[in-house]
Image (tube, rainbow, N blue to C red; front, side):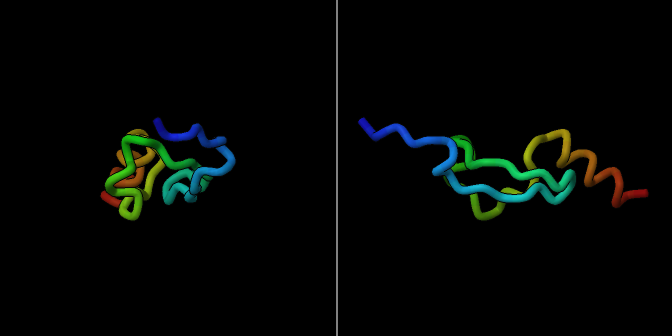
Amino acid sequence: MAKMRKKSDLPTKICQSCGLPFSWRRKWARDWETVKYCSDRCRRARGAASAQ
C-alpha cells in the first residue's frame, strides 16, 4: 500500500476562473497537466463569461 501524503505535500495550481489555489486530487491523476479550474462551477462560469 502507498504511503499517505500530507495535503501540503501535494502539487497545487491557481484556478483560471476564481484565482484561488487548489490541490491535486486523485481523480485528476491522469490529466493533471490539463486541469485549469478548481471545480465544475468555475469551469462553467468561465465559459459563460467568455460567451457574453
